[in-house]
Figure 1 (cartoon, helix red, strand yellow):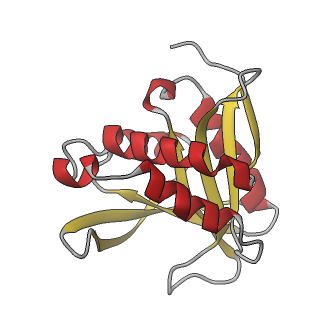
Figure 2 (cartoon, rainbow, N blue to C red):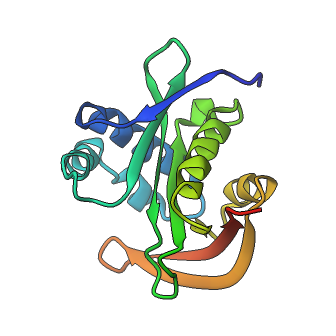
Figure 3 (cartoon, rainbow, N blue to C red):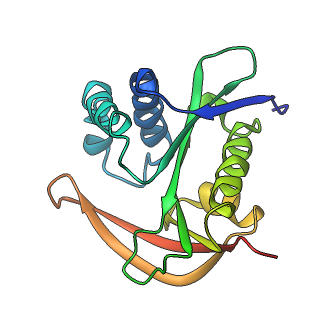
Length: 179
């Protein structure tokens, strides 16, 4: 697929529904076969819209939410979130890239890379190093981050979703933001 020119900007409250739609559709596509079908089919755009609206309406939250569209289209094709590290072993000099998601039709066309680059710029302005967590079985995402210079630091965790019924095994990656 040819690379597209991306327009990346900070998200506003008005982006909540579009972010929710990306969130749900990307999870349903990316995690198909990696998470239970009944869990994925139960993801709700209205519920995610409400959650994203609350998040975006709270200016005291320490993270930054970005949205990306194909230049000139104005339609949200992806989003990303970054901010201070949240792990118990991180220092104040450690930031975290906590999400990059794209509509499945946009995978492989450069919009994810544009979001990633903007997140790394934002993280580098505030932190010395950054971490991110990725689903262990998500080979596509792991390869994306590895091509961008992220390296597994050996830490893993298992979290649960859906009231403890869906285990999520993740691996942590790290990127130095100082050369």
